[in-house]
Image (cartoon, rainbow, N blue to C red; front, side, top):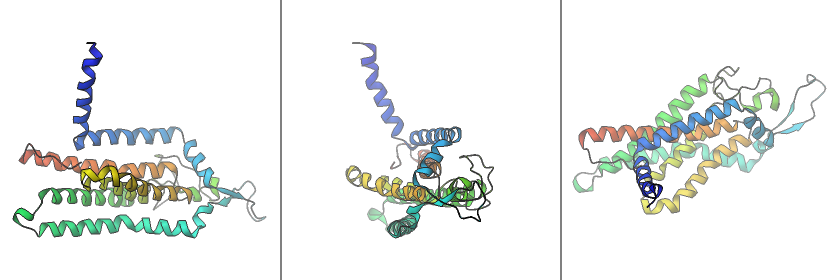
Amino acid sequence: MPLHSRTAPHRRIAARRFFARPTGWLLTLMILWWVLLATFYLFPQIDLAVAHAFFEEAVCGQAVDQGRVCGSFPYGAETVFVVIRRILFYLPSLTAIYILYRLIANLQHHGATYSPRKTRDYSIALIAFLIGPYVLVNLILKQISNRPRPYETDLFGGGEAFVRAGDFQGACVGNCSFISGEAAGAGWLACLIVLLPKPLRPVLGPPLIAVSLVSPALRTSFGGHYFSDVTLGWLSSLVIYAGVAACFEMSQRRGKRNSQTNL
């Protein structure tokens, strides 16, 4: 038997073991996040091309400086899209409140009706929501990244200079474009696939992911964020979720070596 035929099954087994643990997902997703950031930084034309696809240039008035670009992102004025965006804006927070309710209800059970796995899984979801979309994105990165939003830049009708992803040298002073908080919330929703019973994941997982991608798409089409902002925002929640799950698993190993986290 050829050597590659013998080693292929072992590689598949090793890969399955690697991704059976949150640490495997954490390492993979973190590397992917940094690779994408480097790609967007080195090739800013990706952000510009996507933003231009949604921007509609208009004729400037006589009072506007010569050479100024005028126009707008017309999808941002569509009532249907605005309503959908508003619903999706609150959906992660409402979902987190529901998970908190389920956690409290589970903690009130005793004996055979209490589920340690539910407590662990609900806790991971809530902690990941607080650390990711709320603290890391909205309270930290969006306040210090200094990246103007597309509609704020002079390439798309604004007055600020374009800043590539990860530059942190822009003129924005707060609630900036890098990275998208709504995309991070949407990415957290996608992570909730792990809370579904395993037989239902192939059925309900794809629709959940599809819904989680609508918000980033709308933010890009509205000119509120660049493609890099929503991509890295969405992916950041997956990284945080895997990181929190990995911490829980490492803590469990110290007390019970054979327990595994539901991820």
